[in-house]
Image (cartoon, rainbow, N blue to C red; front, side, top):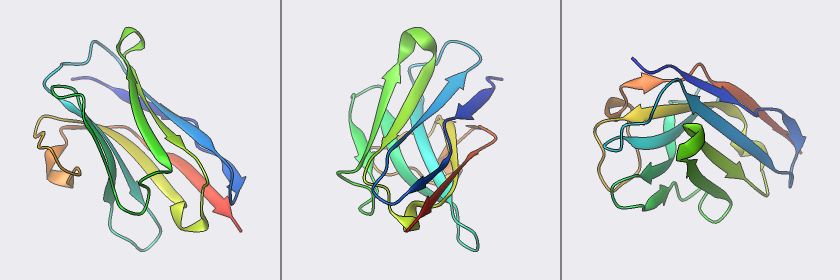
Length: 125
């Protein structure tokens, strides 16, 4: 069972940037999608970004498209979520996942088999 560890969450002002990291405890199986979810207080957990290793394609929620970028560093068993021009509505707990159910679409909670513990992002106006 791979363990996932997120880092990089912080408190920033609107317009700022953060880079979240997710490190897996072992080699990342190439059949998994590498996903990011977030959950704001009182809201459902939502998929915001996906990296499909098989196709190399990425997928983003409309609310983050053009501002967030997901990337992979296989040598470090890690993937990242680069977040630019952050907005207060980006505030929430961010989770990385390894998802064996890997369609070419945004991730859904049921796709994921392994979750990190979460890292908090707070954006103030």
